Image (cartoon, rainbow, N blue to C red; front, side):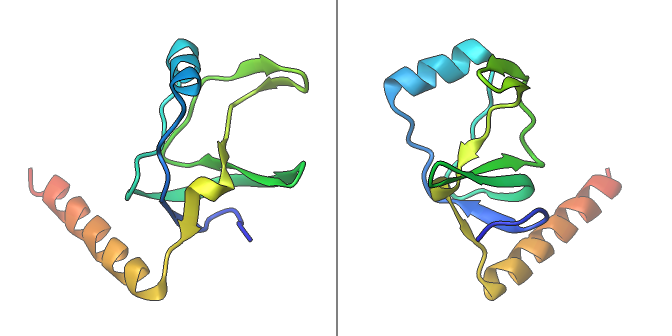
Length: 102
């Protein structure tokens, strides 16, 4: 379903209060609903997709499997539709042009 390089849109940024506190304590950034991200790593484990995003790089932490960067569940994202991809590309190009003119 998900693959590296794929553009996805965050559809769920509502974390439980406990999870939000944990994220703050770990120094994590979280995805924002409506924002578009690029997948830099995807995996499927225990019936769930996990994702790391190019635009968000969080500090690594000790887990049972070792020192790892915490990821985000795939259900929080959906793939971009073809029309959305064109709009997103145009917005990114416009942002680059605006940065270049400053």
